[in-house]
Length: 342
Image 1 (cartoon, rainbow, N blue to C red):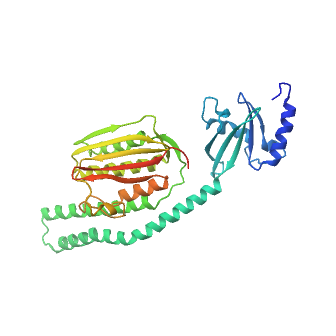
Image 2: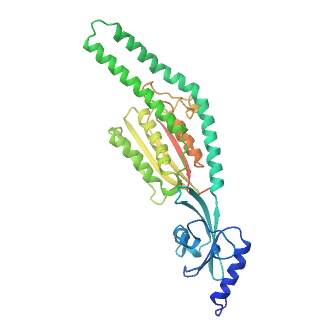
Image 3: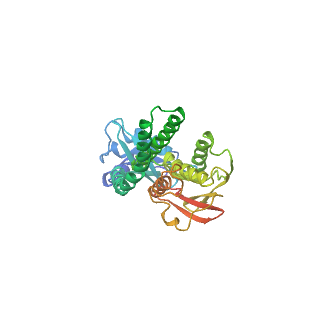
């Protein structure tokens, strides 16, 4: 760019660019100075109540690099308007002779379509689960009905029988509640924004839940973390993946054994290996372990929804869960999740 080119000439150039470009644009100098915004010229694009100039700091804060506004890149932005509406955008950064141009591409409609498609798929899967729900709930309800009839028929009612009856009722009610809660989690599809975060933080939070309830008291735990490994997704949902896997492993080992977790990067994906020293997965059950309500555990030790929920969440994130190895000495699962936006 010529040294004697002044701001007026730049403004004229910007006006020409703004008039032919459909997306909102921000022009930055090499030092990060805001030189122009398309909603200030003839091109339009002004958002009610907030100008591009006012949003510039937000967009620049999301960029990566030592001098971020001079690094060609594409990053995601999520903003909440005063009305409460959520706006999803992509910021495309390109170098120019005067510094850089930031193009803001609205992705809100596309995001909504993706959410609708995912929700439709989830509801379709939920429909197939209804028959399984009926079967699963029938067992504890039958037990509840039987014990109530027994308690009613005993005259006088002894304290020992009453205590056993109440224990039986409490156990079966808890099982029904567990099934209900799991179904709610399976059917819910959140619109929470996806962000980058340390995968090992989600793993530690999931382990903390088990440590608090004493599930890891007799478990020898090994966690090989990678501080630089990040995942792109919803923090709570990813934590749910790991919590379900860890609970599954602890229950498979009957609360005693070794649980090993290792995080590693694999190109644009992240892999988390979860190994246990339980009895492994039976050969005839391997093909069904991710089916809703399928479980090899005793009736009071699982709903058969944990792995199904984790598998659905992983797929929604663009990842997967697979059983890598199984033998009489244990099972090894691998969770694969993206490190970058799709």
